[in-house]
Image 1 (spheres, rainbow, N blue to C red):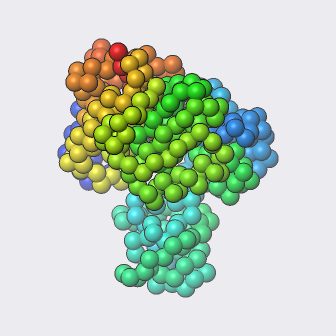
Image 2: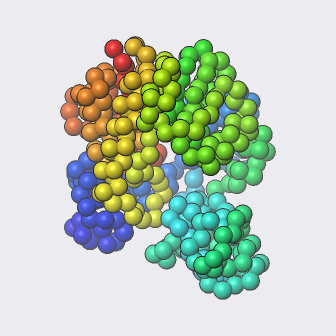
Length: 390
């Protein structure tokens, strides 16, 4: 297939496919096909401040969930994802925005803010959920009135009864309610392990909300030391604080601030370790129904990411560590940003303690980075680089 044909069939911008081809060449189509489906295993992180992996596995198995402990990480439990099946339309149509439709495809309920438009129906009637391209992702029962142009419905709008991927309702389990588990991808967990925080240290998470990595870092530090978790969104921070309470973390200080200016706004801040997990184009997130990102957005993300790294290099102590990670696939947001860190910021690439991905693309400089490629690993597409400040 030509790039134009792929763009039309998969609903990608042609220019975006050219960027992916720069990274993966003849593998690009395999990458896109892998991203379209869910990983065969869905990762959960055990909150070892409250539970053991053995306890969680036994509880999940008691719920009828097929799962196992990860061989890569002690705190990771992997839930088997059943093969996808075709969902037949039942009732009236509800069209969801991209992220909401992709979550519903995995079995999540559909909430009001995720709805774009609906047919007319009555509460309690069956409905089917699609994305904007009419991909049917689920059937369910309407729990809220049809959307109108002026409606700002909150809460559950559709109670999902059948979805493309049939996963257990983890968020409704006692394990979740008691703060014993948290959904988190394996590469995201590995990122925190690569940072390798030690008890008593000062750690900065520059783009922390919704908080998964900060909470994992708190667990690895045994509640000792301090994690300064920054985010510029008060709304996201409030949700993060709820997660801190649910999981029982005690050494996280959440601050609302633009992390690009931490050296200016917090002139006394010095960290032993800094995590830079910045906004990105998220091209590695799966399953993906379609992709509406533009090349301009990728380039904008790249500039943004470099700003975070520049500040990270200023606030980390000499001899301290900086870890950079993204959930995307482009060279522009991964290796090119790593090159900037090495050549412009004088950070030194460091070997990673856990390495199950491929090396970075483009030569020896990137040999200490790792890429998680969806066509090879049953994970999202991901990139991790670690640096030392000398």
